[in-house]
Length: 241
Ligand SMILES: *Cc1c(COP(=O)(O)O)cnc(C)c1O
Image (cartoon, rainbow, N blue to C red; front, side, top):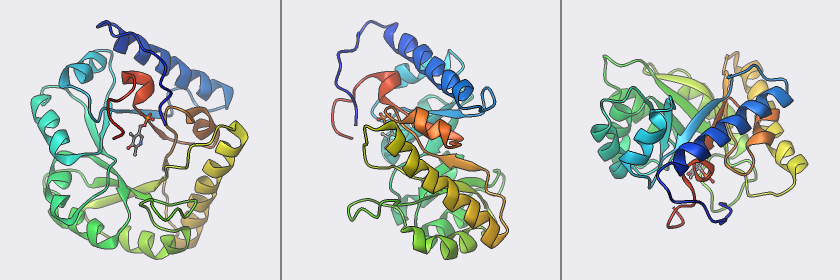
């Protein structure tokens, strides 16, 4: 999904790209009538060094997203002195639930009740409830994780009753799509699905995790509350992770 343009490699470049991206996000808020600062930027730091994370944490970036647990835990531990919030955005295996429930405050990628139950059971008693997004496979692509929209109501109903979780909203990763209008259309489906879910189950889900480097404006236009951006901040990743 990244545009493989050449990015500068000097030590200041992450800071510069970060500032540019924040400007991009704040301009989108203005353009689409969103309250200033209402969209949380989750800086996707997968594959990036602790130093790169420190560089933007020093610019008051608060939220970071990781998708690979072993790598993430190493960083969370090295960066314990930073006051940041960690979001898990990757696929979740059964045997990883304890570490996720211990080291993270948000999980964007829940798509099975069994996993949600384990996260709830393993969330440390002293911690706040773990904030949860249910990942939806909006376009019902065979190869993608996430539940089909038709399975959403029963999963959301069960997850919303788990004691140590706080179900906050829906998340999706649509197929790359160059047309702004078509990007919006897909994101509006997620937004509408959430409104319908709130009405059906009498819930108050208030967050939508959608929008990445190449479609964040469309996501902001459709009421995203969390955009997950890696490439635009840190530059292209080495591998296709
Ligand atoms: C990698 C990743 C992103 C960030 O993608 P970019 O194209 O680098 O902005 C966002 N969400 C998820 C779930 C990811 O795995």
